[in-house]
Image (cartoon, rainbow, N blue to C red; front, side, top):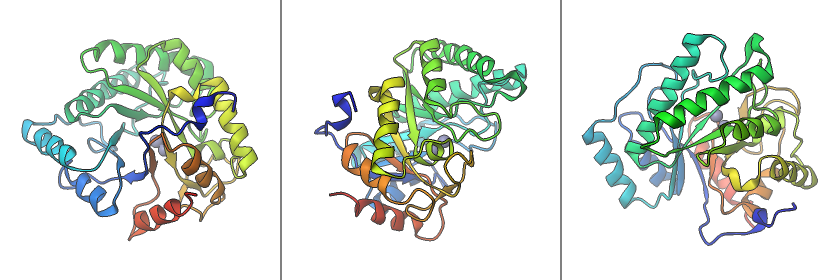
Length: 289
Ligand SMILES: [Zn+2]
Ligand SMILES: [Zn+2]
């Protein structure tokens, strides 16, 4: 790593968290966080598979903010809807996507969240370069319309499934340069990176990938790491998350992250079934030297 940033363990360090459910109300995420003993989590601020927007009412807002104040949670991320496609050449879908991200940003602001994570989008027949231009155009509008609530938008690297862009660090860099705003940052997903062809299974492979990330995007722009093992092989472009240590990634990349990126919040996004969140947390916590 040519930048010293990667190795500095800031006094503000974060453990590993999970994606928490908001079933029964947004504040319920804090109950789940407490039972798992985590200081970081991610939520959907509304039903992520529907376009219908949700306005946070005063009561829900104050319940959430009260829970935040009294909990030991230090950092919460929102993950924007999976329906959003900022790279679309379908005008209606593109506009709807920008509008949805504006609403997401508003909700984050209402809930006191600093960041929302979004996938750049799928370019379809438009092609990657034109798709990237559409993303830049959309983000500029979103940032302009949300000047009053300066939530940061984190672009997540993708597995490169279908025509999705963002599977190369260069795509994210191009978007960031095009938008040119301190409100745009990055989320690194281990499963997506591996499926996209960044072989992070070994210490050497992990270091080389982080060096590349630093050279292209800059580690100072990395605000969260998604900790997911991968069902697919390196370069498979398969976006299928597996429980930690049960997939093709193994434990080494998670060991590297836990010991070298203590200053970056981390979130596990593996299928929520039975007590698997607790199991995954225990596996990852056991990797800290
Ligand atoms: Zn994601
Ligand atoms: Zn992710």
